[in-house]
Amino acid sequence: QVQLVESGGGLVQAGGSLRLSCAASGNIFSINAMGWYRQAPGEQRKLVAYITSGDSTNYADSVKGRFTISRDNAKKMVYLQMNSLKPEDTAVYYCNAQIGPLNSWGQGTQVTVSS
Image (cartoon, rainbow, N blue to C red):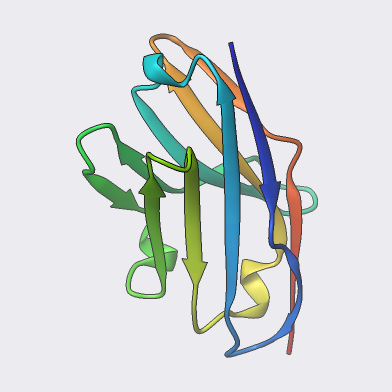
């Protein structure tokens, strides 16, 4: 089992930046990939970005060129650097870990971008 704790959310003006962090603990050696998802009010949770154990990355079209996902295996951390933020990026952001067919989720961190 893997436990995930997010941090780094907050309120920022459009055009600003935030860095989200996700601390992983537990059976981290079985993790295949880690990612960030977001859920805006009234919408489904959607993939923002993920990074595999081989450091391959993938991004949603809406964040390409603005967001960067990275990981620090020694610190058991995954990060999401978010630049040029837009009001439509406002959502609760969740850290995700894939272990085979299973998923673990963090509790989420709110990101609010004001116009």
